[in-house]
Image (cartoon, rainbow over all chains, first blue to last red; front, top):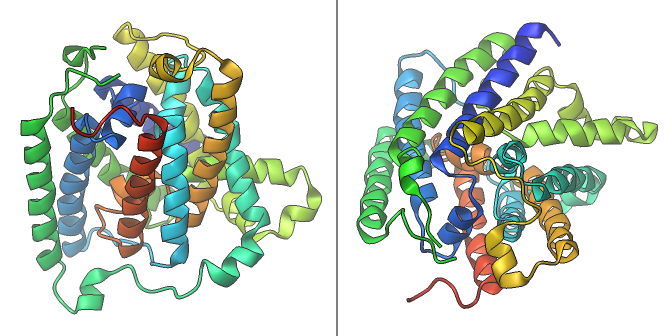
Amino acid sequence: MTPINILFGLAVGFIFGYILTRTGITKYPRVMGMLLLKDFKILKFMLTAVTSSMILFYLLGDMGMLTLTLKTLDWGKLVGGLSFGTGMAILGYCPGTMIARIGEGKRDAILALFGTALGIFIYALLIKPLKGFMLTGEMTGDMSVLLGINHWFLIIPAAVVFTGIIYFVNKKFSDDTTIF
Amino acid sequence: MHIDNSKEWHWFKGGIFVSLLSVVTYFIFAALAGRNYPFGITAGFGYLAAAFGGLFGALNDNPVIKRFGEKPDAFIEFFILVGLVIGGYTASKLTQTFSPENIPAAWEKHHGKSVVKRYLFVLAGSILLGFGAALSGGCTTGNILQGWAHLSLGSIVAGASFFVSGIITAKLLYPNLGGKK
């Protein structure tokens, strides 16, 4: 609980929130426009960040400067993911954009903040039964180990696919109009 | 309705900034909390849930409450949420897009002015959101912006599921929008 920890948390949150709001990622019509497959600014933003981070993380990893912790696969990832996506479409924002929206004066995001914490609380209450049938069959999250290949054989194709998707949706859909 | 894209940053600029933020914070987290894990948003909510759980002494042994409440970096992640509010406020004030509202205008146009109706949906949606984020091990930030970048198999499945159920739910809420126009 040192002041440096608090300052670091505040700084990361501030920069992230500033980027999200400034790029228009927090806008309800943009999130819903993406899920209705009509407005792809958020998808382009996400895939740009993912592609760039992917290359940076693995380059730095190969240079021995950082160690990556990969998320394992279990049934919770699929079931939890489906629950999360349903919630995101009902709200029109995800947890990060929700909090930035509170700063923009959107009052329904304040209720959502408490609802989200309540959802995690319910998860905590149900952890015993959930462990039994959701968090089983755990397998490694490292595909290069699963497939027995060097990770760059996954990174380069992934970067090509992501860039291709960005190029395609950028050509086909405008960022200026909305269906709402 | 028209979105004034010229007032917003280009998606490429925003994306590159987020990726730099992800990499830099990874190093600082390692130095401050000794963890090899990217920044996320869910853990901040977990801290709130743990604080709520702490009100009931009996839950102190709960492994989830323990993980979110006691790990050394949970406190940092809570302050990320505080920073997000200030960041959103500052950016919206600077661009004159700060606009208090009870419900999103697009929702109002299609589902009516009722605040009670929207807030019931918000409550149900946010519980599904929080539960799902905890079960799948992260939200859009942890599982897509970070998890996809790490090519974590668990995150690829989780992130893809976000889109599958999100697209279906959006279509159910706005059956006449999207698709072919």
